[in-house]
Each structure stands twice: as structure tokens, then as C-alpha cells.
Image (cartoon, rainbow, N blue to C red; front, top):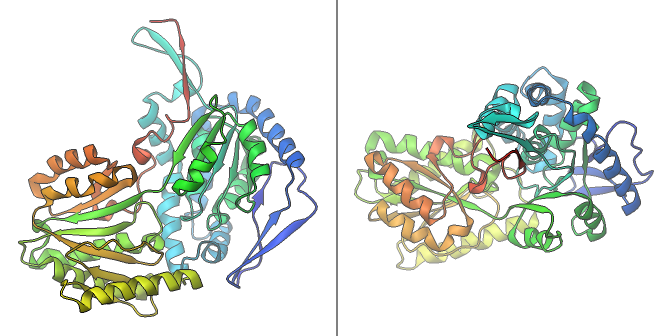
Length: 466
């Protein structure tokens, strides 16, 4: 068992409250968090706001290099920062050590200098827009980040907090980040390493965990920040949004889910096994906790390998992955929910519905072949339904009612139908259509939930009307 982890990182010179609470999770993870009070948090926010003066004098390219250097350390197998991350990440996130390493590699790849520069170019074409006025087409404009950004992270996927704080720091915005349980380790370690390498930049960042539901502390941050970013379920995001004054910007990343679609071109005898392996990997990464994790696979009928046979291949691939990328342990409530879902599916299979159930027993993977697409309550664990389709052209109409929650559709075997189907899926609400192998780790410049990862945070200032 790793030792207790301090779930905070503060600018140099800021004193932490003298008391800390110890939270024990599942008997395996120990997390210390500060007994923060409103007055202390207000003082911390003052320190962050004052650091903006120094940030505005920095060039965006310089910030890219500094932030990217910390990201590179997390990819270096010999670096003490990565070793410490992998020591604490499994207990914090609930992922197995093997999966934690894969997730860290996939996330930290996008925190390197070259990827962050590519993000800035993708968003602004000319990075100089963040450093002052740039004249283009007879008009001078500049991009200005928030004066103070408050980010609230859900915690279901480790690494999201680091991506979030990088976005606001690239825009020269002082940031208070409240990580969620399950994503405390990486933001704290990133902020601490930033303090070692660039104290001036780190002076504009604080990572402070406190238990959810502390409306008094949240209220202080909501009143002080001019931009609030919230990740989480619909109810938690809505609760925060309702408390944010109309004069402040609110960026919401609410509940999303993803699916996959497999056309007949991927269901030939040679191709189907590779397709099943890609599906299994997409399902297994994050143990099905990510918004990008496909919950349902729609398989087209008419190929050499039937949708039912694909479900069996997928079950075999998930079983194989347990040897190399074991699933994390479920807590009591999660295990109970999975048991109930499996029981419901087995009742379906015992009827004349044509359903089949494959699962890993003590391992959390579960594949349900269900011609009727019975709505099953989602739960943690590698659970996925496989549903037959007569024609993939039916999919946009099937998904249309879920458009507000759709995110990614992983695709395989669509041939020359790909672009036309993607067009209709976009109109149905999907924001990302990619090959199955690309599903788990979107690049930093992706249109996050259909928006702009940096553009949603900035405001434009024009000099003259052009």
C-alpha cells in the first residue's frame, strides 16, 4: 500500500491550514486534505489573482515550453516524478497498476511541448494573439484569458485535471483547480513539479481538494473567479451553473457517453478478430469510466462474421486483456450494481429474446449480446452491449434521442459510407467520429464536446473595426 498522499499543491509562500483530515478509501488509499475555511481560501485566491501580472508578461511559447517540460517528465521511465505518480495513481484512481501506466502514457503524451504548441496553432493559427494585438485582414485583435479561473473536476478519469489546468495556464490565467476523488495525484504532482522548475508560473496555480458538497468554499471561489469550468454529471454541473452569476463565463462538461459501429467491411473472417481487439481496448481503457468509453457496439448484419459471433470475439479479447491490463477492483456498491446488471441480462438470455451474456466472473468485463437493446443501468466495470443492425444507416436515427449526451462514435468497416454516416451522426449530436484505435485518447486540439478547448475560455479584443 502506498503512503498517505497530500491532496494539495500551493504557490510558494502560501501557508496551509495547520490541520488536515485523513480520508480512507476502501482500506487501500489514504488521502490527506486541508481543512480549508472561507477566509483562507479567499487569501489564496488573492495570491493567485496577483500572479496574473507576471503571467501577462510571459510569451505563450515560453509557457508551452515550461508546461511541456513537466509533461515530458511524466513520460520518462527514469524520472522520479513519473515513479511517484505510478506509486500513488492506482490507489487514487482505482485502476490496476498496469492500466494506470497505460493511462498515464496516453494522457501525458498530450502534455509535451510539441503537442501543446500544436494545440495553440490549431486554436489561434498565430500564437502571438495571446501576447498582444495581431493584425490580420486589416483588423487588429488579441486573445485574452480569464483573470481568474476556477476548475471543478469530476475525478472519474485520471489526468483530466492536468489537461484542464494546462489549458488555462496557456492562456495566462491564474487557476484554482479542485480535483475530484480519483484524479488528485496527477494535478498535485504536476503543480508541485511546476513549482520546482518555474516558481513564477506556479505562483498562478493552486490545486486544492476538498470533499464534494462544501457550498461555502465553492461559493467563495465562484464569486471570485470570472470563469468557471465544471466537469461532472448533469446534476452536479447544473447545481454549480445555477450558482454562477450571469456576468461570469461558465463552461460545462456534463455527462457524455460514446458508442461504436462496425460495418460489414470489418466483419470478414480475417478482419473481425482485429476489430474485436480494438473494441476490447477501447472498452477496457479507463475501465469504462471515460466519456469516450463505448458502452454499446452496433454491428451490421450480413458479414461473414455475425454480430453474435463478434460479441463472442469481443468477450475473448476482453478476457485476454485481463492478463496484460487487469481491470481495477470494484467497491461494494459497484460490484453489487454489476451483479444486478449481469442478473438482468442472464434473465434476458434465458428468455426467447436471443440475448447472450459473457463475463469474467470475478473480473469486471461483461459482454451482452442483445438484439432488443434492452436499456441497462450503466455501471463501472468493463461492460458493453453488442446490438445487431440491419444497416449502419439506421444508427443516426437510433441515437438522435440521446444527442445531448453523445460524444464519440468509434468506427470500423464503413468503407465509402464513412463520410456520409459521419455527417448524419454530427447532425444527431455526435462531436467526434474516429477509428476504433483512436477512441481512448483524443488529441489536445480536439473539439471537446463540440466546443473549442481554448477558444471557449478566451475573449477577443479588437483594435479598430478593420
